[in-house]
Image 1 (cartoon, rainbow, N blue to C red):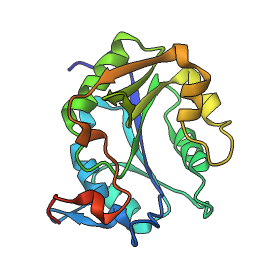
Image 2 (cartoon, rainbow, N blue to C red):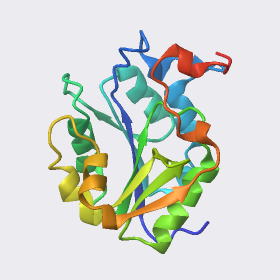
Image 3 (cartoon, helix red, strand yellow):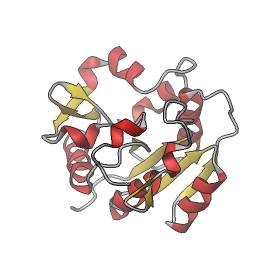
Length: 195
């Protein structure tokens, strides 16, 4: 795929995973930390930059080893809106948009990421969201025109707040494998995946 636009990526990696019982982002799946599964999956050549926002020093150090830009999140309240703002503030000002990733989707594939990027190139003013069986998920691409809105999210609100506010601006990408969009909240969510 040839990049027609300059797209940034922001990985949101500040979740506390209380229901998981420990830091789920560092939990090994097939010997690799869950967050590192995403680091490996991302087709980095399709992004202008990859930014990792985290409260965890281990994850920030890991992100540097992959050539990503680590951004320390010093907010201890668990506010997703603040994590998003940290990411937006780190984006190159010449980026045309940003794909936001959560860090707890270990079955997301490079192919789906590439397809979502391709859809963005075709409709660069739209918000692009993957969907499977009428259930939307992550990652989500926001064009630059929504960056100011993302920086003004109410406390503890994520990007879905803007999806509801601007439904006419949303374009969906159909994903056939629901597992790709599944996020891990508990250890039971990993079954039957080997750890």
